[in-house]
Length: 431
Ligand code: AMP
Ligand code: GLY
Image (tube, rainbow, N blue to C red):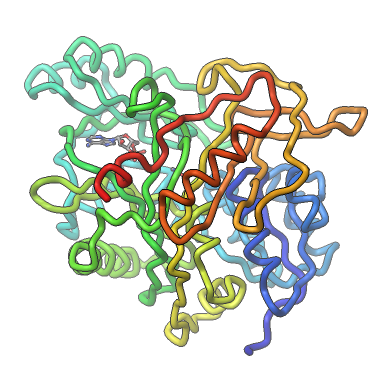
């Protein structure tokens, strides 16, 4: 075993970060784990420190004080704010791109320009800051049509408009989006792109310069309602593997999208270390890139990491050391399925502070990942966000995983709980 770091700081507080901490906790090297700011579920595996994920100086000072040897960054905002750049200045290695790489997620226009320049398949698009010009363009194209904010918008920056009128109102809505966190002026531009049809898949790639390792495939369910209805959310559930991505299709995705993307990023002079999460539409004409994210997906991570047999710490550490080529990924054959338990009302307004009762005994194949949870002054677990929990089951078949995950979702007590009933249904219908 290589020399692995003994003290690790994970940045973030969601279900993804709980899954990251759980995977690092499984490392045979038994590192000391810290998380900032973490959540009550993470606190069972790591020491949580009350520093916000967008407080860059605070996180750097914390890492120095705790003598952290490796930082793993969960969310996109600290990456875009340059956390990894600042850690590098004080000699602390991290997993996650520097601000130049994080721009691939923080600016959809920048990404579209790279995709076009390197001829990577993606929908045709045009960019605007003037609403009148955008509306003229919309009227010249067939509906449906997609309107996207350029900058980070926490999942609220994309409108798939069915009609011209809907697209026109999206132009005004997206140009008026509030700035996310401390990132300057993110949404003063929009993209308008042709609407693609097909199934989506999330391809997570661990990248280190020109080397990469493709993680198991997964599929998210973005809409709030059963049958893919209602508004988009951060993601309501996932499963892995996504069998719609056959080995032949994965080989094509690697040839036409993954390898060219990794090479394009390197050719642009970016030394990318971190996760390149490629959102792909499987169109009748072939796979096409919807977006890049520069971090692990949430809730994709909650199904991908439980399937890794490879030591996750060794994988991330090898990426940060430029030694990824020595990693042979081992994947468990089981299927994983994650149901997100949300607060009723999400993605719009929802209550906070509702008591949560978790089952006392869980099957060993089921994990409950905390996302929007907190402890009230009496120490009881309560809801504290839109996506509250993620219930992941691992089983020999997807159907078993679904039965096991939903049994636990039903057993969770919480008056405001809401979850989709059809996670994985599309694949279950096929098999
Ligand atoms: P993005 O953040 O760019 O991945 O967009 C969020 C979601 O909007 C995607 O997961 C798709 O469901 C949808 N979407 C984005 N772009 C397109 C497109 N060109 N055609 C159809 N749907 C899209
Ligand atoms: N589940 C989609 C995302 O993490 O962006």
